[in-house]
Length: 391
Picture 1 (cartoon, rainbow, N blue to C red):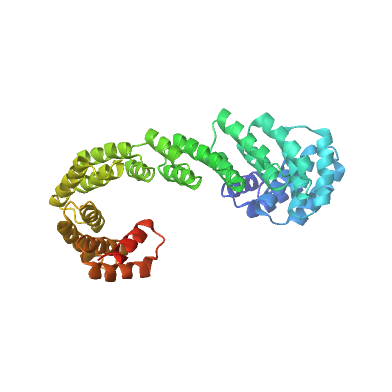
Picture 2 (picture 1 turned 120 degrees about the horizontal axis):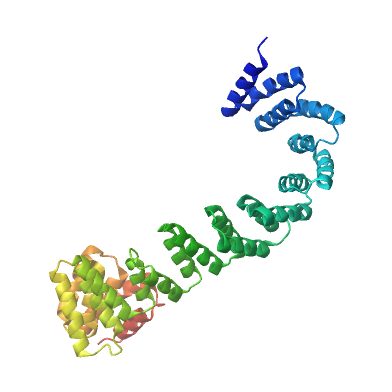
């Protein structure tokens, strides 16, 4: 016969391997040999951890419990065994017995499991709140928040609880992610933003920057997005620049363009500055301003810029302001060589023909534009009205 010491060593070895289905029968044999409750309880724990021989384990523990009815450790094992065997009523009976005799934190949590199984959410919630108040354990807090959100209709209270915890205690990602989930359910964009900002401050993950900006854009708070990026500008200047343009914050955009150009000497920034200078001007016919705009575009083209967007913008400006119509048409034609079907470029060319009094060519080209784009855009409509009256 194998000695008890050898069996103990073997069972502990299986436990270390988390092979509880193998340690369970060994502890059972040790209990049968010695009658020591420690081996019986280890047998029950192994059954629970391996989820094997649950009913057989219940029978064995119940038999022992009848002989030792005041042993709370037996109750602590019977409750999860009953729950695993889907015997909710019996689990609750044992839970109530345990609750009458113990207010230990671990017992309150154990009893709450039986109450949750039996859909007594309010009672379970009260016990878990007591456990959390005593331990400040995040796992308990997250369970409390889930119950409040999904079962007791207290989502806002759950958010308040989580917010208080994260502000007063060092918190893991799980608390922040739970908050994000609840804020999303509430469609609380400000809550999402504040949580993502806190996560960014905590971890410095650049992905949170994008999520913060997306949230600001979703709520149409571009000013808020800019204010945030101005505090966290490094590495995100491109997004900030786009926001400056969208919000027509031209002075700030020009400063940023100058910064970009000082960093990489890319001639496209000269073209960008030309656009900004023109868009910023209150008087679009100001000759001094137009000369400066043209100077920037000329330098950009000399520097190798041939993007059709810049070419069309520059060419159209030369045409519309009658600064140099022939040159403007030539530049727009360069843009059309890159994108021959671009209706906005065709509109620019038609406008050039109109300015040259080539009415038939302007009309035929503009007709194609409105066939594709319609007359919803004001500039296209103005051009069409003018070209129809061209003589």
